[in-house]
Length: 112
Image 1 (cartoon, helix red, strand yellow):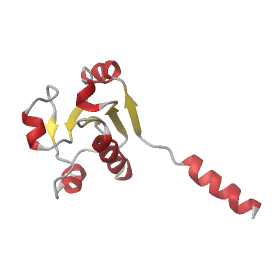
Image 2 (cartoon, rainbow, N blue to C red):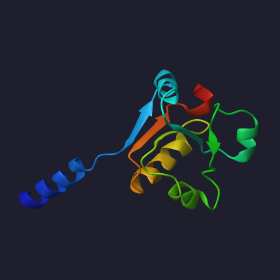
Image 3 (cartoon, one colour):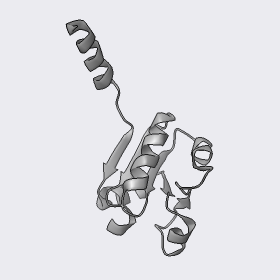
Image 4 (tube, rainbow, N blue to C red):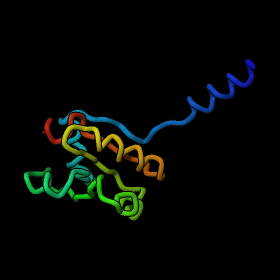
């Protein structure tokens, strides 16, 4: 039993996430570097305002995962939504698909 628990512990601790949650200031610094900003809100939310240079990939759209899967996994992605909930979920999906550099805006667009 001890060996099983130890192996289970090793499995969970060796899995690292590529997702990092950033404060607005750090998010802005990365925007100045080679990166792509992705807005995962709805088109209606996007139309009310967005972060300059952001592309819209609606988390609630039926083709969300297909749209994300088509992206280059080696690019740095800066993700945001309204408050941070959808971007957290979107970031986890991207991580599971093998994306290496994912940064989520803490507090989302409301914090912008």
